[in-house]
Image (cartoon, one colour):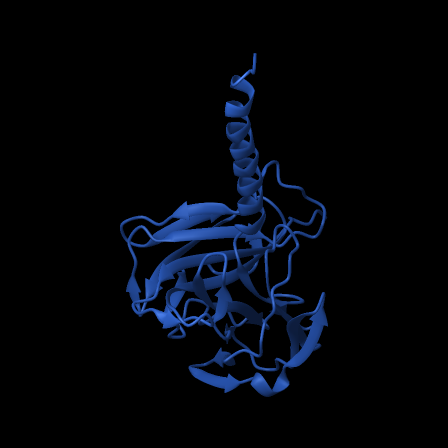
Length: 268
């Protein structure tokens, strides 16, 4: 007598296996995208007057990759004392795993805070069927001027720091307001990742990206538990769709990013 029960179970087992593979694949591909704009240090003083060196990569910081191809940015500027300087001409192109990234050098000589800002070209993410544009900034303290660290530069989506965004110790909280076109965004989502130096492995995939929801005033706060660079990405939808490389109208993810460096306390 033919046993009909075994064939009837095979599709279910096969479907379950496919679901598991799909879930693993989705998990591997769903790590947060972060536009990196990271200097070799976040301050200059009498002993550290040499030029700043910046690295621009579009990647997944906590997992140390994969690196995504970054075409030449649309905008690269530094803001200081209410004026902006175009830095696009200083960019140097590099390649890693056949993906482009960029570096530049800036000789900071003036006292006061300098806000470095990049607007990348839109990045097409076929797996999520959307375009991604991450407006990214980092603030460098120039010789102890301690001014203008909370200035807004007018990016479409931007994090206004309520905590001075440099000279922070491990265990300090960074607090900011998510703004879109200068208006606070209630309950906006903020993703947080640490730029892994290879010394940490996430307990599970869910630890890779920390997620915060801003309050009714668009304000959020996060305590940085480890030394190094931390990226804060406020993610909002653009008001209008755009045309994808596949010829279809798709949504645009607008990110307002800020990079913060936390340091361990030094003992005498």
